[in-house]
Amino acid sequence: MDALSIIKTGANIIDDPAILSQVLDDFVKIPGKKILIHGGGHIATRIGAKMGITSEYVNGRRITDEATLELVTMVYGGLVNRNLVAALQQRGEHALGLT
Image (cartoon, one colour):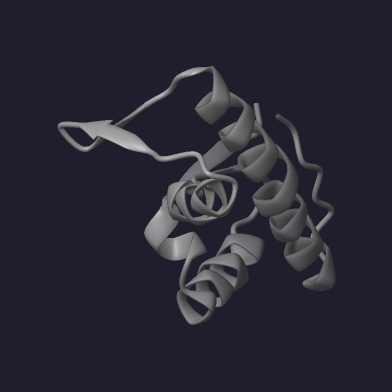
């Protein structure tokens, strides 16, 4: 059976282009099957503020009401996911984004 590598990145990596580039370069070098799970909370917070959606946090965790759920779905499943897929494809990786 082939090994499967699962890598999780958080918002701090997604928000820093230099670190993100290095993480993606390293990800591409991992042999075999792999999955990249990403965050993007800071981007969602910034876009939400532009849309008049204020993020509420309790103990560092975002409270997800209906408007916030729509926001994070758009940002994580759209903007962040598509940008990561494109960046991986530019590196020659056969990438597919799922939500």
